[in-house]
Image (tube, rainbow, N blue to C red; front, side, top):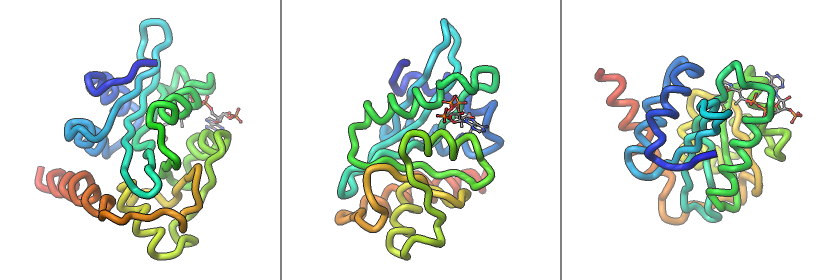
Amino acid sequence: MRFGRDLIELALGILRREYSRGIEYASAVVQDGLGDVAVVFVGETPAGTEVFYALELQPRVCVHYYIAVLREYRGRGLGKLLVRSVEGRCRAQAYLATTTSDNVGARRLFASLGYTEYSWEELDVSARNLLLRATCGYDDDLVLIKGIAPSALRDVRNVSAKFNERECYYVWLRLRRS
Ligand SMILES: CC(C)(COP(=O)(O)OP(=O)(O)OC[C@H]1O[C@@H](n2cnc3c(N)ncnc32)[C@H](O)[C@@H]1OP(=O)(O)O)[C@@H](O)C(=O)NCCC(=O)NCCS
């Protein structure tokens, strides 16, 4: 496992193969100096990657933003290794990810590591808004959380709104114009 923003091109190479769209968001958060990159190797081959970031909410949270393992390396525990390693690196009190309900692999991966699933609808409005802003999770219908109950999260310095404007809204605007 290697960590570092200098791995972003390697990470994007993997994400491009596994995500149909949206990897510009992963690129932007790393270029802006907020996000970081993990790459897992099998021998010399980069086999999987994660782009993640921490946000100073109360408590500090770590967001698993983009994660992918190349098809030929799936089902060997690399996804779990990535998530566990990022948790160790991020040193937050709570961990977040979002996904779609039809993504069985991602749901199983996070469930097996102790994450609890919530649909946006079952959260109260303030927890939902905070989590949507903090994760850019608008295309997804589930949020996966470890370490805290959603209603216990606080954002006293408007961190999630600032993050959202810079890393979700502005990136979306740039994509729309291109
Ligand atoms: C999700 C993903 C990263 C999982 O990677 P992986 O290396 O195959 O995961 P692991 O081998 O560590 O498996 C972790 C657990 O999930 C289960 N799992 C993984 N893929 C699964 C699938 N398609 N169906 C059912 N279970 C699955 C494994 O059996 C394992 O369960 P266990 O802990 O109970 O034994 C990979 O499928 C992927 O890259 N998907 C495409 C990109 C994506 O959807 N990313 C997530 C967006 S949030």
